[in-house]
Image (cartoon, rainbow, N blue to C red):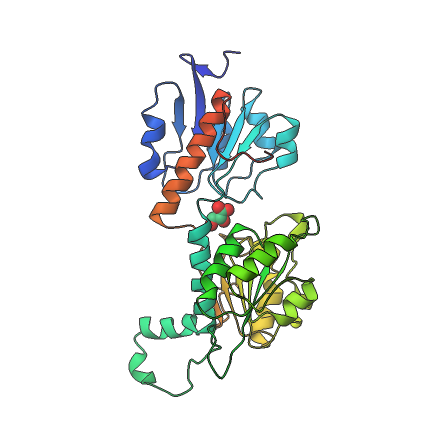
Length: 349
Ligand code: DGY
């Protein structure tokens, strides 16, 4: 029982300096904190060495938590707390099998991610990748003002173009918050596809349709989602059930002037198929916060090379307010798991 204790205190391993949230850990006298000391992702070897005998670990998206980690930790590990809403990097069945509690950070990042979804949709539709690069490279004088250069599809409605259909692959909290923002742009129709296991929710849908005064809000199959969306947001969890749901066949069904945004997990979208879709003009543009294989996305990546693809490095939740809330929640989850008390957001609850 005492193997994980240092001077009677349970050991916790923290895989990244949590900045302004660190006092919440460091000022406690009832835990021993072992902190990855560098300002970059935690080395695997460091984690495997330091997690030995730990009661809990606070991890991030790039830290796969699997059998190897549990073996290294030994029998005292009680909780894995991830500072993320996504948990593709954690082997959940294994955690359940070993009675290890898992904390995550839903809700607190919903608004920041929804903000970024709108940003990416606007950037992708309005040629921001090319236009911004032109200015940064000092080429504005060559362009002057030109009637149709840099034009793209308009997201907001106008008299000559009075309807817009927004689509969501996955219709959870972030999707619904994104919809709320797009209502101000005059979006008239909303369609979405839920996972095969999520039950239809007609009462919720009717209430949302009335609240946003939409002409329609409908759960549809993937064919209709692809074929009818003017802007399509991918906001479904990653994992084997959603792997490459957006593939060549899906992209070929999309409208030539449509825009695809992915702020969920890179694995949901087949990158090669998306690059082909952009190159061959099956769709207008793409805005990506996540890409399969990240962070190893260099300048030669087919999507980086596509002018109509706007890409940011997984920063959807990166506001000061949200990251502080996520760090705080991750710490609270960690402490709840270590001391056997309530965790504010526990998976499997
Ligand atoms: C998460 O927390 O899983 C998100 O990907 C952050 O943007």
